[in-house]
Length: 142
Image 1: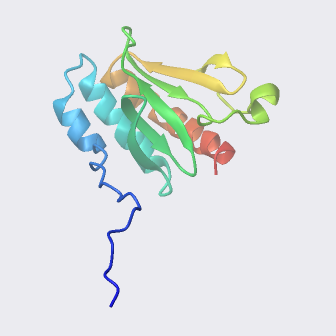
Image 2: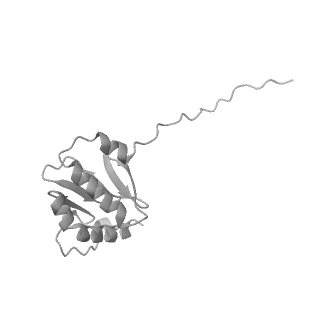
Image 3: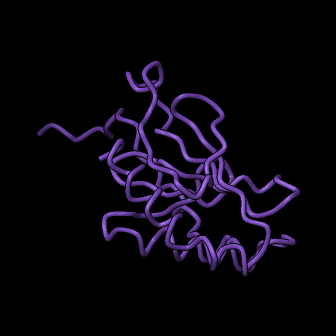
């Protein structure tokens, strides 16, 4: 009778669960933490298909790809970088078309922009415009 020998296949080790955004924010010591929390909720409320995670050591948001990430090093306010994920897309050369009548976007490249908010009243004053930008932006990553 043949005896079974142990398999030579490597076993998968379970990876630790990714840190939740809520856990990350609870531990965050940042001068714009209330603004970051408010902006997080605005982004999540903009569309039911938006999910979140920690990417690039900061809260980030995605649909089929990541499209927005907090820049936690910004000193002049709570800043969000809007992008089209980690992969280069055709729109990198052509750019994205976003209506921005409030002038919120500071273009960093044809497919990347920053939005900075000074404080909570600034967020509240530009909430509707920012929500509109998020809804337009996600059309490029769905």
